[in-house]
Image (cartoon, rainbow, N blue to C red):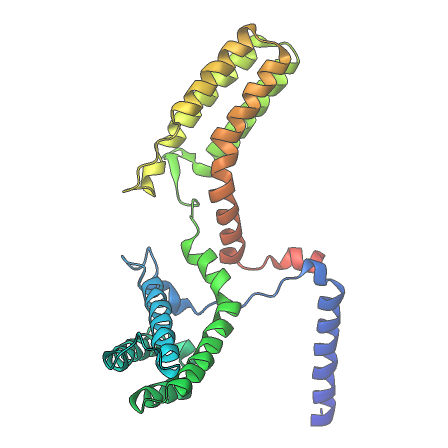
Length: 294
């Protein structure tokens, strides 16, 4: 095959793929995944959130450089000769932590705007404070560029909870237990509406046991900040629901069960399940059969 024919075929293939993606753009999301080397700076591979601390340092240092350079360039009388030294101190720290990005994640080394950093350092040494501010603007653009591509996906992959390996007991996986809790809540509702009091009460008893068993796993993540689950409010609501199932009206039972579902299920799901499901989607990678079917 001649080269012109080969190139034309490649262009056609790219055009076809691009057309398919465009047609199904409502079902396609393009995500840039961060380099695998980034994982070593996050828990559980690292005891401390080293990458986050470096980012926090950069944010603080950029703010300090902006503060001193802007005020010195405007000749603010509240500033004095020591502030030029303060500026150089913060510029030195900023340079250290900015260049550290390339050492921590070699794949991102080429993304660093080293020329802007060099201009910033030189301008600070020569007291060209407006130039310091301009160079800082360029550095900020390089930061925002990476944040746009990677910040959300990185936070999802490395900071969202992972329940996939957790177990309620050696024979009961976490996912199976959560499914059973959902079924018990629904069983209470079904039995309540259909007048089967015994089944509703026995399902509530099973739900209580399941919630208490679930609560024992919270400490696996919340080691220092101990969260009590179920707390007093949930326990009181379960007691009220039990009494309502015995003597209350159908409306009372529905109200108590709805309150329990919000307190014991929805509040935790709003934080943990959304983050976990999103993380799992990215961590598992694309489902090619699903993509092809779409």
